[in-house]
Image 1 (spheres, protein in one colour):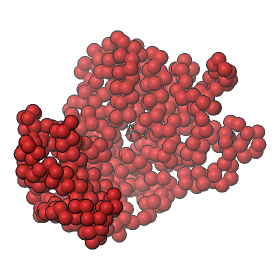
Image 2 (cartoon, rainbow over the protein chains, first blue to last red):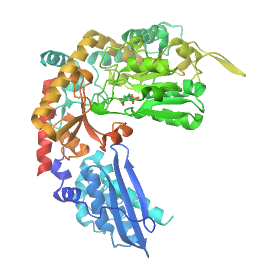
Image 3 (tube, rainbow over the protein chains, first blue to last red):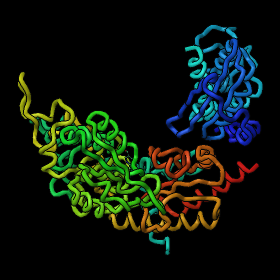
Image 4 (cartoon, chains in turn blue, yellow):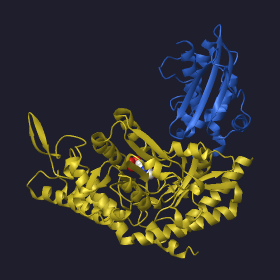
Length: 162
Length: 415
Ligand SMILES: Cc1ncc(COP(=O)(O)O)c(C=O)c1O
C-alpha cells in the first residue's frame, strides 16, 4: 500500500490549513455552484466571475477533509486570471491525472487520454502545484474528494454560459 | 467496572468469524464498524452454503422433496426470528430486503392508506435517513405534516413538548438506538404517549435488535424493523414485524407472484399475511442465513451480549478519556449503561475522513462521514464524525489498537 506521505504532501496540508481565495462573491455578477460528496458529506461552494472570457474572480467555501478543501484552494489559485478555454483544458488535464487510466498510477506522463486521441493538449498543460495531488490516485476512495471542487467548477462554468 | 467478562466473550467469539483472521496492510484487522455492517460467524456462512448444496429450490411451489425442505427451512427461520423478538406469531414477520425497505413498506402501504392532509407524522432529529426520506416522499404525495422531536442535552431526545407534537399525529417513527450517538431511546414511554394520543408507533430497531434482548410486545411497538447484516446475518435480508391486525388491514406493497391467492383479468385476491407482503421469489439463502444468525446470538445469550458491550464501551470511554482528555469528544450519552457501543468521535481539528485514513493505515476500520443522519449532524454542528462501533467479537485489544492509532494520527497531522 502507498504510504500516507504520498497522500498528505506538505503543500496539500498547507493549502488545507491556509486556504486561498476563501469567501463569497456577490451573485450576480458572480455565479455560485455547490458540489456534494454524498459519501462523506464533503461540500464545496464555488463563486466564479467571468468577464470577456476570463475568470477574473473566484472564491471557495464549504467544508470537508484536507484533500477536498486543499484541492479547492489549489484549484482557485490555478484558474484565477486565466481564460475559460485555458481553464477547460486544465480541468481535463487534472481529471486525466486523477483517473486510474490516467498518468496517476505509475504512468509515464504521456499515455493516451481517455478518448484515445494523443497529443490533444492534456499532457502539455502545466499542472504546477496541482501535481502534488497525483498521489491521491493511489487511494481510490479519496479521488472523489480531490475532484469535487473541479466538478463544481465545471458546474459554475456551465452556469455562467447557460 | 471490570472489563474481564466482556473480554472473555470477545476472545471466544473472535475465532468464530473467519474474516477477523485476515490482515490489512500487513497488520491484523481491527474491525470497528459493526454499526454499518457486522461480520458473519462461520455457522451463518455454513448454513447458507449447506442450503445451496443440499436443498436449493424455489419455495412455496414445488411438491417435490427439496422444494418442501427449502420451504421448511425458510419458515423455520421465520419462526426462529419471531421467537427472537418475542412476536406473538410468525405470521407477523415479513421478510424485506433490509430495514430501509421495511420502513418504506409501512410508509407506502399503511401511510398511503391512512395519511392525508391535516394528518401528522412525528419523527426525531436523530433518525437515520431510512426513517426520514420515506416520510418526506409520502408527505409530498399525501400532504400531511412532518413534525420533529429535537435532540437535547447528553444526546437524549428533548421530550419537553412531546404531547403537543403528538397532538393530532397518526404515527410516531423513532429509532430505538441512534446509529451516531448510541442513545437508547425510551421506547415504552414514547409508545404509551403516542398511543394515548391515538398514534401508532414505528420503531427503527436496526441498531437495537443486534445488541439488546428485544421484546416487541414489551416495547409497545406497532411496527418494528431491523436488518440482517448488522446482526451477524447476510446482506439482502431485513424484517418488518407488525401487529397482525395492522398487516391484515394494509394494502399490498409490491405485486407479483407469492403475494396472491388468485389472479383474474379483472383483479386479484391478495395472499394471507405475511406472504401478502412478499412478492416474488424471496432471498431464501439469506433468510436461512438470518435464521442461523439469530440462533447464534441466542446461543451467546443476548443478555451476555449486552453486558459485554456495556463493559467494553465503559472501557473504551475511560481509555479515550485518559489518553486524550478534552482533545477527543465522543458524542452522545456519557453513561455506558444508557447507550450502545457506538463511539462517534471528533478528534482535535482532524477531519474524520483524514482520521480514518490514518487509522486504516494501521488496520483499524472505522467509518467517517455523516452516517446517513444529516439532520443530526447539523444539530451537532459537525460536518461528519469518525465512528467506531463495537460488537460481540471486539475486546479490549481492539479498543487499545484504536487508542494507539488515534495517537499516531495526532502525531501525523501535527507535523
Ligand atoms: C438506525 C438505522 N436505521 C436504518 C439503517 C439502514 O439499514 P439498511 O441499509 O440495512 O436498510 C441503519 C444502518 O445503516 C441504521 O443504523
